[in-house]
Amino acid sequence: MTTRNQMAGGQETAADQSVCSPSGPGQIVLVLQGGGALGSYQGGVYQALHEADIEPDWIIGTSIGAIKASIIAGNNVDDRLPRLQELWRRVQRKRARTASTFGSIAAPATTSPRASR
View 1 (cartoon, helix red, strand yellow):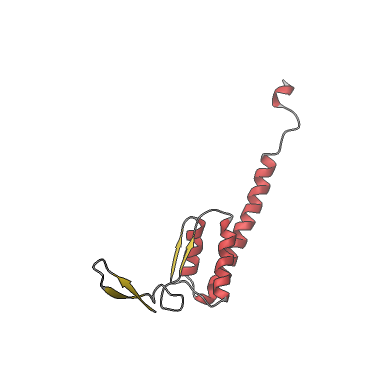
View 2: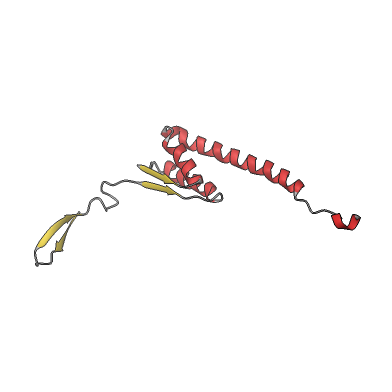
């Protein structure tokens, strides 16, 4: 797709816009930010892209997004989704164990320590 632009001196120039066009060549960049809750959404976003046969050319991530980005970049296309799913299963199991451990420690006391003095 070519458009015409006018320069300051009144001259017209042709500008090739194929890089910006969805039908033209370009690159797909997947940006994954940090934040624990976002980790589950990121897996779903990648799954939707993968199922549509869209694979990113570039992957950028911060915190949990960087972990997911490294799994995507470091695995073959067919292995990426199962590895992301396995990571999320492990994260959920660890959260459940941590919550049960800290839940019993942080349970409210039935009597005040000062009341027994």
